[in-house]
Length: 556
Image 1 (cartoon, rainbow, N blue to C red):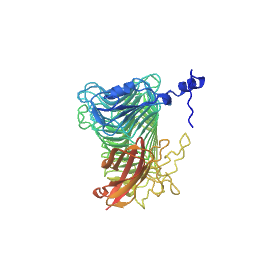
Image 2 (image 1 turned 90 degrees about the horizontal axis):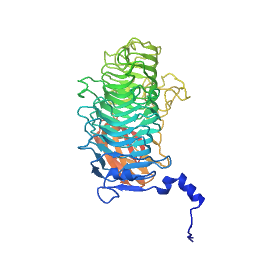
Image 3 (image 1 turned 60 degrees about the vertical axis):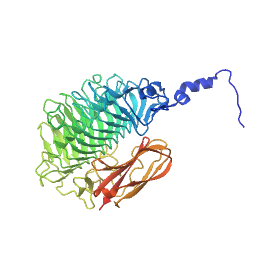
Image 4 (image 1 turned 135 degrees about the horizontal axis):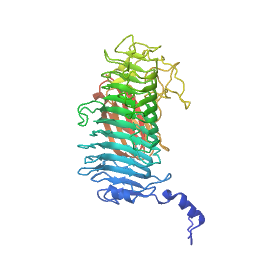
């Protein structure tokens, strides 16, 4: 039996409830659509949003820019959520596609931002000031260009005295951008606490992902991106060779720490960049410090696969850099280079697979100190010398990779299996080598750790790459396979679903489902693996902010 009653005046309880849960009391779903919605422009929808509201953008091309005018709250984020085909198009416009300036508790999910090409510094998404608790997830940013100046795909500029914190950049794709002297994805200045995970950055004419300090962006003493993790990203085809501001010089990094500190770079795949991964500072007397590079595949860097230190003696330093359990392969010039002003460098348990006649490890600057090299596998160049530094446990053997050009995983019988050094724990008591390998399998599966980024064995993958509270995504994919195959997946609730397959260079080889709204329950999808060359691939399911990835080996 229902009982109805009328309150003549607000009770103290209701007043208190309204004060502590404003987002829950008033949350709305605001619809933006070319027709039939609450608003016909994204800017109007965002302008109307209060804490707790979601602005849902239906399919359509919206020729406009958007700026967030207010913040959400810890219990009530403001969310901009793009349905499949929701495109923010900058044709004929200048400036930034989406701007968040000194606003907090904001999510931007599933938007396509394209064609911002005007004067000044175009950006796909710009986050500035003291903005904190910001999530950018599963967005596509492309064709952001400046004809005569700089541009960014996604940029965080911490310029306020209050640091940016709790930053999440996850599952985005940034491609086909013309950047001048800037970066595809950058965190610059007073930023303290971030996760950059699962992004795909490719085919841009300058740096892929960059963590910057000492450029005068933030206040003195706080002007560094710090205390963050760069994990599970795929970066490829990054080169300044055709960038008009570089005059043919090839110096674009896939991943770059330029003055940042206390950053972990792990489980990334970086291929065919001018420089694979670099840790340096471009400012004399300043340093990138406390950087860990582990469990990465890094291949085909033009200058080299891993570089550390200033590019000349007048530049800054690289201090306390740990390079462990990586697999590097086939750099044009060298695998690891210490340039200038390095101090406290550890290089252990790596596979360095070089080109004939090229150095494994080079002390080019000559003024680098406290360098420890041990327990690496060297193959492809010299059979007797690791380069500029002694390695007491060096092994000059073929590591038996599945394919040095396309798949850097270990084959059965590899001399890297169980041959690594126990590296102990870091200052936080966690394994220095990381708890999991590049495929998120347990890092030690036998009596000793393997050398390189891949731990050979039968350990299980984590259930999901980036767990989201209350979700239980499932993805089942057979491996190994011959010919076409069917994958099966479960959605805990209705979701916008994308299913893509990638090769080991991060290139998309199949997209059977692209931002399709599907009901909860089990679903099937076909993969045309019969069209792919033999090798290792990754099948990634993304569903409204959560993601699961499975490894699939194709045999012929």
